[in-house]
Image (cartoon, rainbow, N blue to C red; front, side):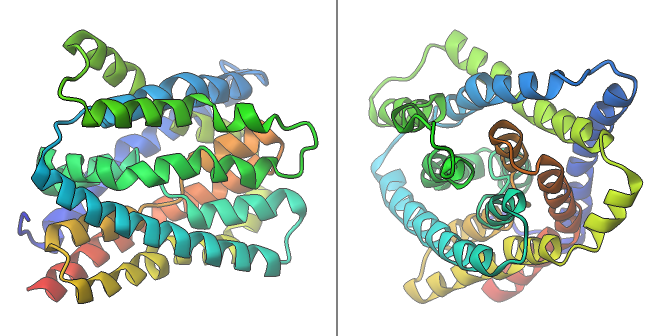
Length: 318
């Protein structure tokens, strides 16, 4: 584990985040200037869900397997199953008790359960631990990827009578994860040309997701902005996602999990709410603006919470 001061991590993390906000600003301006018209958001949504996200998954799972990695894989998957299960149980419990309209309840639950592990997660972990950290993060994300493409969609689509459940579970995200897992265990990998294609197409997900958020925010009035900033449930979702849920992973200290793996798990679980929540809300007719504010709110707050958690973990493990 790379040892480092909290101040360096905090400043580097903030520098990592600034381009993401600038991308959202580009989307905001493009929508205000009508470069992106009213039909653009659904098109961007489809492109991400069915093209760029699956490519990102296949690129992420392109790594070399070994027996040592198998042991680490077991620890990482165990922690991933634990945190996702706790998140789903608490998320469902809080949703049932939330005094929110139907279009916001599924968003509220999704903001709590699903984090930005694939986008901001990679940037932060690479910054702290380099390429080895990215390998660990990829393995930790496997269970998460399966859930966000199944349970994540179910949260928004369960009330739709016309939902094709077979197509729901055999969608590009699930199929890409399965293919990626198979390739992970095989003694050979994709040709370099194919990997490069997955990488280039997959990395489009980051700017597209932020441009989508900016575009959705451009359709919002200032009165709504103030209202969402004062929304108790957006604050509650951010608090659960950024601090309370990640700290439940500290129970694994009792099992003497390697420090590096525990650090990866806690920091990844502490990522802000997933931009995919906005995408799903847009696609399935939930409150996409509420989702956008929830994502932006937790993304802004994580500028404080990620360095704080990192410093706390460094203190705890030393």
